[in-house]
Length: 367
Image 1: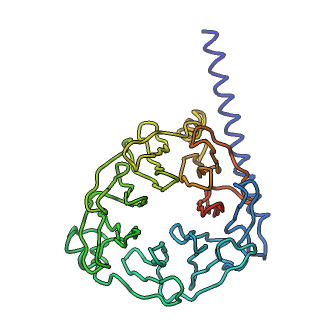
Image 2: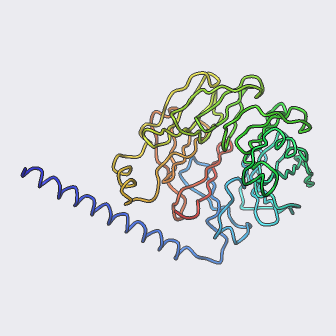
Image 3: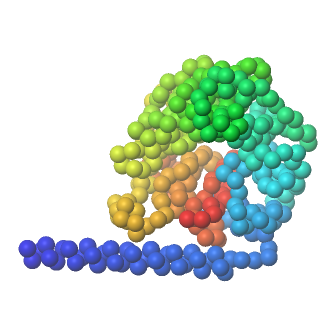
């Protein structure tokens, strides 16, 4: 009994100290936000070319309101043609391998907030399924897929909020393969077109907010129960990994794929990699999982921020992982991980993009 009475106050003392730490952390964040105000355009997007050891603020030239509002989650593309950022009434472009902070603005004809890479250009779209496309090397945005919603509603005639208000299915994803096949995630379905959007076929039901990746003719897609795989250009899909929760991300890496899925038992996000075109998978990143103390603190409400794994990318010889509380890299395919220095701004989590040996991060707004 004496040991029990000693043990209980020890727990209470630990909780008191943890709570004090959380309160101080919150106060520090508020202080950083207050002191970070400046007339200069800064702290919107950062770039690293040395593996995340140092960071360059490349925000100059972007709209000032992005300092307050942040970048729309599907408003950034990073690929071999550079960076494209959708904001306000334009699309902002930064050349690849640019050594200076320089953005060029291109006027945008519509109100579509989401952008996505296509085989030879950029898609722009909104949740109502109004699509535009710009071909590389041109400045004209042309309407495309005008008949998609008509066909999608005919295929999926469920009456929901989107149908009642817009007679449409809510569009979440647009993806084009190297061969030109286009997929649109809309409502709870995945639609496929192999004839430049003239006709559409539903190839998956129950997908949710799907993300797709391609490597050597193999397609992967996240869905509500994990990850799907297709080897026939997306005509048929089969589940390959799942831990009871939804798929969060799929990415092509050197020689294979990486995926993040939610484990409903542990209530954490887990990383898996495949080096045989998505046939078999190995779990990695065990040491990136949140500690028992942080999981406990979240359960009892002492810690509001999350340490969930949100993204996985290939950057040269490294795997790079974005977690809500930091960025990590691994040089041994996920066996061990090194925490990277963070950009000089308040840390509420980062959206992570990688092109070649360059890494770009956008700080999230809010907790």
